[in-house]
Length: 413
Image (tube, rainbow, N blue to C red; front, side, top):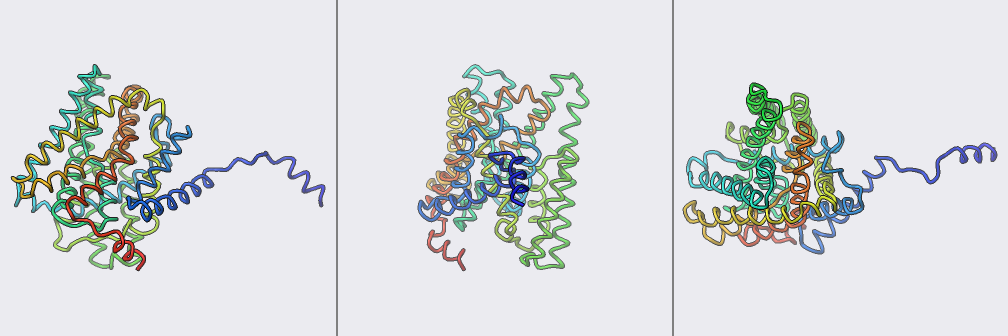
């Protein structure tokens, strides 16, 4: 018997090589522990801890190669962002925009000026027009994932919180649409096929809206028959969103636009308020944690060395443009200057949305994507820790956050 054991040990590789499941479990443990330490000891959002784990992975040289997400990583990012965007969209009341058109003008102006500031900053640095244009479309929007999670953890409510959600949803929509137009233009420029260059953005937009309508109606149908806060109903809701995300991937539609539009449609075609369970249950919480770890690991020291300076200038120009518009139009839209400053701070994060837009670019134009990768991925790396902190500072400046002890006590209950 001992001889058999010895023989078995001799044929096994040594040292043993841990598989994907081992590293995934280790990442979840590290992310969960560091997130709690950051939240309870430093009074910072948990996602700062999640992102810190990703940054350590990137610094160790084991991050995503040039931000390229494999099948598993891309699926996790799409599903987690799908949940967060759906939840964010379900809080956007379009009637408010009709009642306060200044808010819609603020959204359009801050997105347009941010786009122009990024584009002309990169052109001033001597970068090609196509590179500047692509970077502008990918980094113009605030991170819906960061905004949604920080607001949820702080239990924030008020004028700044609601405006932050609406402006983030709208400029995410602008970013997705403009990015698809840029992809169509790049295809037209490379292949000279104007029909496909024009048809591709139209197909993506129309198909995504149709799928969003189907998702919104299915959720509304389920809600009329089941209590959505029930554990089994949450699983059903999660399954519907996962099905919509995988369908969007199969049909080459926008995995950002589908859940966001579905949430907006659901909120504005029904009278009932929609309040979802935190992270859509445990499975959703795991996806959110992994999302921020993956985004935090989507850069390298080489990329930072090549594009760090350009990314920093891009972020400064972007932040200044957003602040100029939001603060300048604050009184017209019905808030005080202090609230305008707070709102501008909450719109600074760059995170998962930008990474997904970059991944879409890499799928269709891999060679061109490599030229913009250092700038885009450096921007993500710089803001991965600073973005959540900026949102927290903005909400605290507005006085709309719930005291940390009270929030922690409610979570324990």
